[in-house]
Image (cartoon, rainbow, N blue to C red):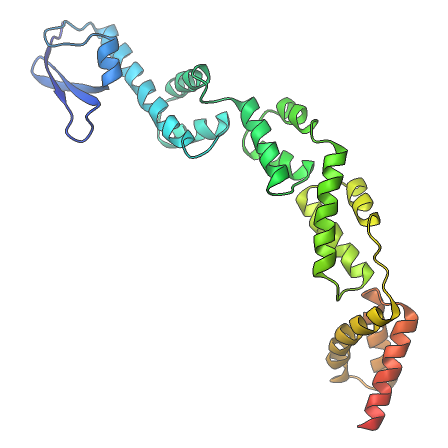
Length: 270
C-alpha cells in the first residue's frame, strides 16, 4: 500500500498541501481535509481512503467557490449549482457542497425568495407577474413562488402602481388623456401589474384637461402633424389626414376643428 513520503505547502495557496506517495506527487488537499484525515508523513494509505479524501477535497473546493459566489449577494440554489457546473465540478460533489451550504446557513431558497420579492417591490416597483418571472429565472420552485407572492397584497400593489402612475402623468403633461392612459398601461404592464390594479391606479387621477391646456397640447402636437402632411397634401386631403391623426391621439373633435381653422387662417395671412 502507498505511503505518504512528503507533504508540502503550496506556494500560491498557503491553505493547500501537496501530498507525495512513495516519493511521487499524488494529489493536493485543503488544510481542513488534511486535518480531518490526520494525514502525515509515514501514514499508510488505502485505495478507498484516497478516493474518499479526493472526493472530500473536491467538495471543499466547490464549497469555497460557492461561498465566494455568495459573498457578493444572496443567490438561489439554482444559481449556485449553475455556477459550480460551469466550474466543472461533478454532480455528486455539487450536491454535497450544496447540502453543506444549507447546513451552515449560507443557502436558503425561502429566505432568498422573500428577500428578492421585498427588493423588487421596494426598489424596482415591480408587480407580481414580473417578480414571478424573475423567480422562475432563479430556479425557485413554483409552490414557493406562489407562497411568497401571496404576501404581496393588492393594497401594496395599488399603492405602488399609483406612485408610478402619478410620475408618468407628471412627465407627460403635454399629452392627451388617451396618450397618458396608454403610457400608464404600457408601463405598468411591463412592471407586472394586472388589468384590475392598472385600471384602479388610473381611475385614482383626474386626466381631463382645461380649455387652455387643450390649446397648448394641440398646438405642440398638431404643428408636427400639420408639417408632416402639408409637404404632400393640401386642401381637403390635408385637413382630413390631420384630423384623423389628431383624433387617433385622443383630441376631441371640437378642439381639432378649432386647430384646423386656426391653421387655415394662418395660411391665408401668409
